[in-house]
Length: 172
Image (cartoon, rainbow, N blue to C red; front, top):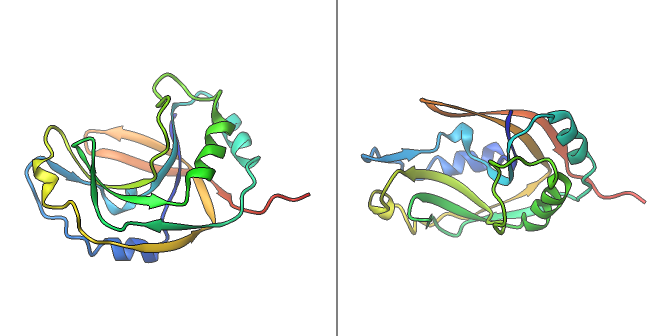
């Protein structure tokens, strides 16, 4: 199974994100709103999802405030995104809990960059240039994260939540 760990914004944030214009531009693929999320850790192909679930249930972290924005930006000349601030510590806990579960297809050595992908282009930033710098700000309290299965097809990726992990204060 191709898996990642992520945070899905609440419906109120999704409603606000819908207001960002997504014009039809040749070469630009807009992320469907049912795929909007913030990846805490991409795991790649995982042979034993049960072990991953067991490890993720061990994470104890309180609900936290997250800030989206303040404007759209371009990453690696191919991705239009909104920065997300406030998830770095949780991403580190997920990384530590799943460090020996990842497969060679998972990303290595990159520092966490909290972001919500809005669009992608195959070859050039030109199609996205008009969309960079659009103001957007939102704040919410993250109360859970999810283990999500990613199924890739010619129609794009389909994300299916496998397990939800509530955030809670550590006891003891």
